[in-house]
Image 1 (tube, rainbow, N blue to C red):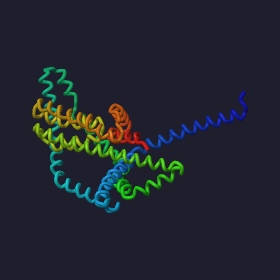
Image 2: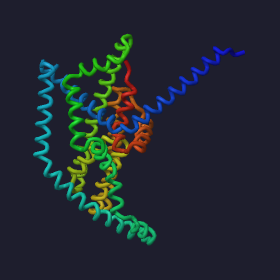
Image 3: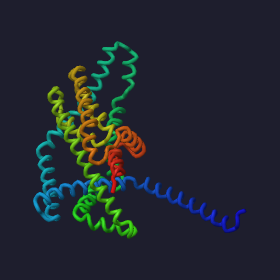
Image 4: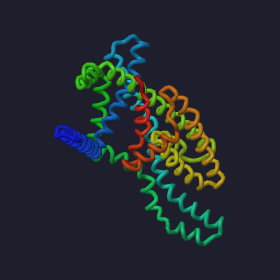
Length: 335
């Protein structure tokens, strides 16, 4: 038979459980509304990890102090960015303008080729109903979401400044922020928390290295392959492929669409070769290059990565799914 004391304890447990559920829901609700801020902060942390990785390499090889090597890293990156802008920005700008002018022409030619080769009025009528002005905004959706990610909270310029400030501040003085964070951890747990943070930083640095390496290889191979096939705008299309490689699963598909449309203007055969080229390059990246890099941080199953990226992108926008596999990689770190 239950006593009043037992009933009192049961009531306390029920209220405690209910309070925990309500608190969890409130935290999730707040996180939902500040997701852009959280992702902007996470992007800044990734920048800091990238800068620290370069800094550690330079300081060890050059036997330099931490502040001197970090200053050299930032100076070198700024110089490299300025040189790249000076050398290829005009070419890329012109090719981008040509690309957007060529896509409508390629779309019309694709409709004509399909309707004439299949000789079916129904097919032609279906494609007539597809308005290119409705199609292009969907193709640009990821780019629009990316811009929106930066612009909705602080404005584009403000978001970039916040991103750079977080990244550079953390990179210059990581110990101050780490020690400040550890003060919120109980004393008997701080050593384990510090080890977890170190493991997390190592994991994300390898993830970032793998991403950058994948982007460079995909961009170079795509540009060379398209150039050998005689496809116009090979440099711009290769750059687009490199950038969209950062978005898992969906990015490679989006990068192939403009190249295929441009190739169709020349001939269906070249378009077929372009499709084969993209399939080969993405197979190389997905099944050879990426697994080799990810072995360093513990292999992430492709199907789980695809599921998480697709689900995360459908909820928060596909531009935000760029960080999905970094979240998965973070969860794999040990201490």
